[in-house]
Image (cartoon, rainbow, N blue to C red; front, top):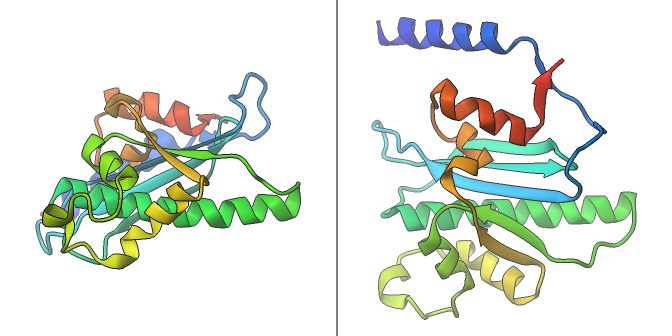
Length: 188
């Protein structure tokens, strides 16, 4: 019965969204690149968190991710910190890609996140929160280097404007509709 309900809900979603699409180069679009990263929706089966990010270029999503984290996070801060690292790695790739297409990119990118503890951890000096974070795998400290090198900044974003929420958990239509506008989804 659980699978039947999930299948029915997926079909209702597809029916309700079949007229939406991503339209690039729209007039009145926001210029530049916005990056949203969020983690939420811990699985009850294996206790792993769902991560999501969205890259929005000139008002339309160009890259996004929704995936379960490989490890069990011990806190919301850790889960958010891990997704910030995922988004940072994608940002570096994206900058290299755009540099080859257009021209070298030398400016700072901001990744928007709605967890102030994860933002503080990302901007802190290594070891500053050692007692609370010594269990975090060293690979996730990649983001510290990119912030220190001046390539990235992590910026707070209000939860109701967190576009990556779409990729991390089910949302009511009241919360869902404003977020699809941020992603650039419009009636086609």
